[in-house]
Amino acid sequence: MSGSALSPWALIQEPSRYAAQVAIHANCSPELPHPHLLKCLREKPLEHLFSTPIIAPDFAFAFGPSVDGVVIDTGEPPAPSAPGVRKFLRKVRETGMVMDNRSHPRARPVRTAERIAAVAQSVHENPRTSTRHRAQQLNVSSTSLRRILHKDLGLFAYKLQLTQDTSILSMLFLPAGGENPHYNEFDSNSKPAKVEPQNAINILNSVLLRKPVVSKLSRYDLLLGVVKAEAYFAFNGEDVQYGIEADRRSKILRTFVRNTYSYHLSEILATIVNEYTDWERPVQHPINIRDETLEALSDAQYVAPVVHTADLHSAEHRNSYLYVFDYQTKFGDYPQVSRAGDIHGWKVQDFKAEH
Image 1 (tube, rainbow, N blue to C red):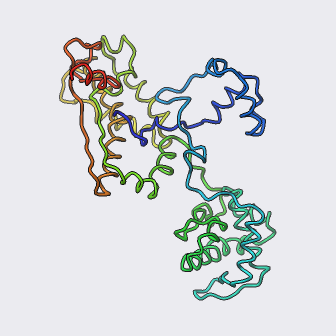
Image 2 (cartoon, one colour; image 1 turned 180 degrees about the vertical axis):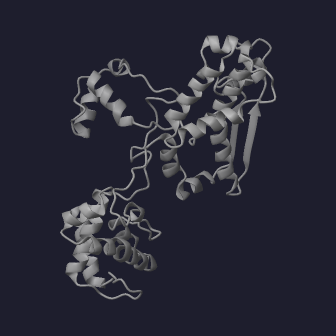
Image 3 (cartoon, rainbow, N blue to C red; image 1 turned 90 degrees about the vertical axis):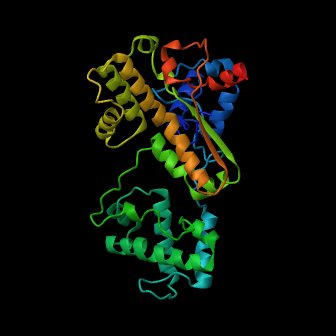
């Protein structure tokens, strides 16, 4: 009801920042190692932790689920240990599976295999390092490094894929599909790769839309629902009572776009205003502007993620059900938006009251 794991507010974007604020408020150094920091926080009264003055950004939350690598993982292979690297080298010596630049396999000297392993280790630990700087660190030429990145590692991964040796694949920091995730981070000009901003949309796409996660969803029948006025609480009392002007709408939508997306912010804002404005109306009344803004925010935060979830679920040939709850009680607490339908969080009360 009125929510989905794909909603932009479903995950906390910067949990470490809020954790540091709580630690400082509780007189625990945020620089402590995680086990010691957790021990310090657990010794503090719960009321003291809750009293931390934290202000979450608009259209987001300071506390909630986050990608912690335990409850919610990123799907990335764990960092290898030194024994893991040694196991990789031993496997290379035993099988001779490292390949050269040509299309047929040929055993490589152990020294070359160790160099390939060193490159893989370097990429795993510092994936954003430029090719030139990485070559200097490893004491190899840039040409040799590019050949290892684009040829040796890729061919080695393909060979392992054919033999289904996934344990070695994970040690080489490559996904089971045999594609190197760091290929696009190295170009011919040896420029540092662009770091993808970790906003809510990027995190959700990279974590929750993985095929194994979607396949788990298909085990169950699914019922999803929304109401007409999901984003009601984005407005203050004056907005609800009298409506909003165009400049107020721009401020609200600009804040939402800035806190949700990373690229093309001006284009996104202009598109929202254009799509959620009735241009056939000769006069843009504040009440109409409020309702249109309410609809835009409701669609972006609730409706679109719910529909996307339903699409993913129904694609797996399971029973998917989607409803829009548009009922309005006779004596509702929010008469100002009665024509917009029920508001977020109140359909459960309405179900109980009417049934």
